[in-house]
Amino acid sequence: MTLDFKSHHPDGSPSESKPDPRASVAPAAGTMPATGATPSGSFDLRALVARHAGRNSELHAAHVNPRFATVLKTIGYDHEYTRAEGPYLFDAAGNRYLDCLGGYAVCNFGRNHPTIKKALADYLALDLPTMVQFEAPLLSGLLAEELKRRIGRGLDYVFFTNSGTEGVEAAIKFAKCATGRPALLHAPKAFHGLSSGSVSLNGCDSFRQGFAPFLPECRQVAFNDLAALERELARGDVAAFVIEPIQGKGVNIHAPGYLAEAARLCHRHGALFVADEVQTGIGRTGSFLAIDQEDDAKGPVEPDMVILSKALSGGYVPVGAVLVKGEVWKKVFTSLDRAIVHSSTFHQGAMAMTAGLAALAAYDETNAADNARRMGAMIRDGILAMKPRFEMIHEVRQRGLMIGIEFGAPKSLLLKANWAATHAMDKNLFAQAVVVPLMEDHRILCQVAGHNQDVVKLIPPLVLSEDDVRWFLRAFEAVMVGLHKPTATVGLLARLGKNALFGGRRGAAESIHGAAESIHGAAGSTDAAAGAGAP
Image: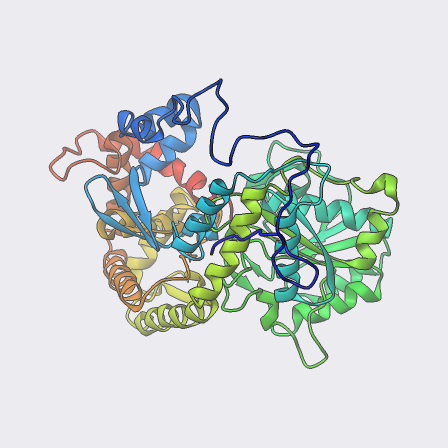
């Protein structure tokens, strides 16, 4: 994608630029004034990275987040990646890893996609102004126009943000202002971000502990229960129902027709319906939005707001968008003196807008949604084919390349004892028995789907190939074989204890003497690993 900003006459023909005699002569684009720093400057990123190679964990432990550095070491995830391409990560030794986490569903089109990379290089070469603030930026207008074209649904205006949680915060404000009501509804296990307002809508207590008091009148409504939703709406104080079309924590999918009817109930009771598509949007579930697959016989899902982020960044520059119906927008931005009543400094940054435009181009080029449907079905079918052999595989929940693999208690006596012992030690421990060997033995990066859940989650880039799927299925089968042995719990604790001492990058010949003393602390780290970061 090459960004072309030549001026045009109203009829579309290029215009000749004429100098303004009042204007001073500025340096040519890409040059520096006679005084000041040289064009090359004194900062050399390549040299800086080379000079400090291998210090990742040390620097994070000392200056960023020592707790998380310990978690990574304990579960064997303390690798130092030096290159990335498509769905792959590479370490300094050239080992290739299959990324089934995708930066928490950020890298839908693979890492370092050439179209996005070139667009950002084009942007830098153009020396465009950005964040002038008192202007109407071209690129944000183009991105808003393109998002509206793809999404439709009567959404008239776009407010840009820097993240998904910031989009949720904007939706909260817009809903309260537009309705004059205080209450917000959300589902159990919901994840809408971790800033102060968003965490008030979080359905996981582990993310809420220590951060009270929350926004008042944020109430949970039972998952997938229309009657419970209508009872809450009938109280007459609800501003909005904020909902993930598919829950990130656990990959929980609503019954067919639920979302469309939930939106109708909201509108019947004067509340707004807000679709949080931060994770599910832009191809993840096999369509541009997850709600595109949720229209029912009575009509389409009709959101008042749709929140996007993650994949809109192209994996490069943080960006988000809140698409809003005109009648809601006009009740917020009611007059000229309220033209910027909600705003932020960086929300229309030109580089972020470029990344968004290029990400949409990459979505088209990669046939992302179609590939997500095909590869997701291949993974689902492959796991289900193993189910008769491995009694702890309970269920596979899948929509596109958003996949939750849930495990359940076995029936055989030896495995039941193993299951009970694992859960007695730590309710977050069992799923680590899957993700840890997937990384250590097969170089596959994935995550536990949430706190106190026996669910492993896959949200890989949408550019997976059939060979990548076969790589995952072979690895998963091997892990299942080990997991269905009576010694599985002891084996996991030995791994965690060894990692706590030596880290995931230890040599094969290193001693595990003393690992037993680290097991208690290692098991405790699984709670943090279960919920680290975004859903």
